[in-house]
Image: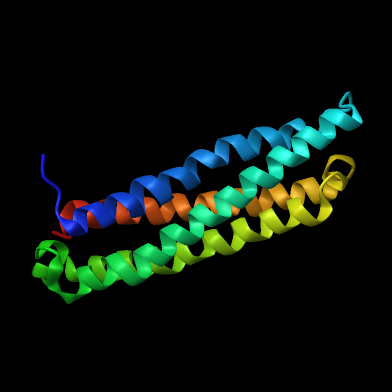
Length: 167
C-alpha cells in the first residue's frame, strides 16, 4: 500500500496526535478517579499525582499537536481544492460543508486549552487534588470538556473526510 504525502500528514494528525489524545483520556480519568480513595497513603498519593501530571501533560501536547496540524497543514489543503468535490459540489450540501468545517475548527481549539488547564492544575496543585473534592471536580469537568470537544471535532472531521478526502 502506498500513501501520499498528504495522507501521511493526515495519519499523523488523526491517529498519532488525535488518537493519543483520546487514549490518554482513559489513563487520566482512572488516575483522577483513584485520587478520591480515602485509603491512599502519602506514597500512593504521590504516585497518583505523578501519573496525573505525566498523563495530563501528554494529553495537552497531543491536543496541541492535533489542532496545529489540522489548522495549518490539513485545513489549507482541504480549502484550496486538494479535496475531491464531495460536500462542496452540490448546492444542497455545501451549507453542511461550511457548517461542519467551521464548527470542527472552533470545537477543536477548545480541547487543547482545556487540556492545558487540567495539566496546569495537576502540576500546580498536585497532592492537594487528593484532599480537595472541589479541585478534583473542577479538573474532571475541564477534562471531560476537553474530551467532548475533541470527540465532536473528530466526528465532524471523520464525516467531512469521508465525503471530501484530501488526496
